[in-house]
Image 1: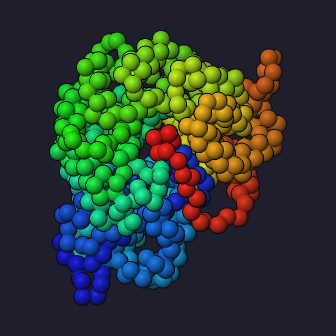
Image 2 (image 1 turned 45 degrees about the horizontal axis):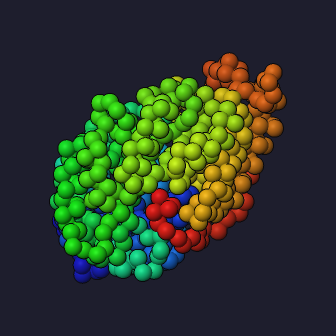
Image 3 (image 1 turned 90 degrees about the horizontal axis):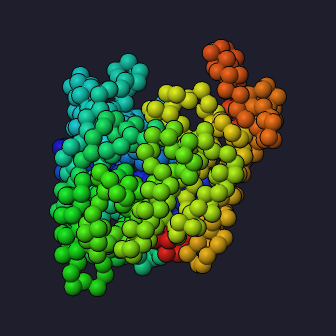
Length: 548
């Protein structure tokens, strides 16, 4: 692949900016695995000089610094919560470079909200970019416009401008079935011995992509574009762990799989190989993995005690269980296929093997009342979790939930608050602001109990809640000025407010009225927003595993 080192333009910079409003991920010093994978692919398979800039490692990343590096291309991680930061950054960068440096975006925001990502990028990758990025760069190096446009049209999942300046999208996502990359952390500025500078330093790790389930609220299908569950070569996974420990000193890994150990035979081989790789070493890895409760209960797909023990001995220190709800009605609506007895059986088996437990919950489904969300804290304490994370139902783009309930989205909510905790839809059995308050109150109640491990998470949630106040006040104003006066929410006979679905559905079928309703909501969200600086959020130091 060609480049022109004579004028310095043989460099690709990959950039991850920090969000101005924190989420739990901001309290872990951990780069996103997508950028790490793409940077490693580029370092191995092209002749470009590759550098990944991760703001917690480097300090503030300015457009002036990046422009002075004279890059051939800039790649941005399109995280929804940093879309505003990305937009401001790229606007200034284009001023400095006169728009001569192509900006390429990928990741969550780019895949799910490409219309928004167009504000800060020239090319947008939806879904997986491991293979497509090489084809894109080859096309961009072509001098002939016709050849260039022809090659661009063949890159799956690419949004780009055609010769007429209009945006095009190459539909038809192609899943990467043979995942082929190995971390090269030497391209990550500041990564060497990062553990000595950050006590909460950890590293993402991927062993598989996709899932074998399809819960109604989950966004994995939107992110990958197609169904399918594919595992990485075990040699590559072991390499990433060993390389990370040796180069950065980091031993805490957050496994980013949607479903870890979805292939039990693969998981068994991985456990065997990982344990053997660290035999005789003093520093051994600690993995926090995302799994389902039914993987630890009786029934099809459940892991054997032997395999659980092998994984524990290989370094699986914590399991994050996607419990989602303690309401049977909500679990049915999610298509979760789980119940509370299954959850307790899973907890018993994990405790038996000395594996720590944390859990995620999704609040705001139609079976949830305000007190149900608060009661998650009591359930989590009895269950034996060391961290309980309550997120908001988001009615995500491309999901079954959006198809059935898209009219309940409150449009205009700012991207910076879409951090997993923010409410931007209309729940059935409480006002949006009540759900927003209940989510944090539940987390506060749980983490105020117990020792230091919970107190660290408590401070993180308190910081997030403080940052969410403009959004919370916007929800309350929308309720006062629109939702209650116009009968979209009505007071119930038992007290509190309930969504009047028939009123909302009539409104939704009137395109003009519904458009005006959403315009008014958008204006309130915007008017509630204070002037902001975009400086990075300070990193809270503590034990990485406790914050996972």
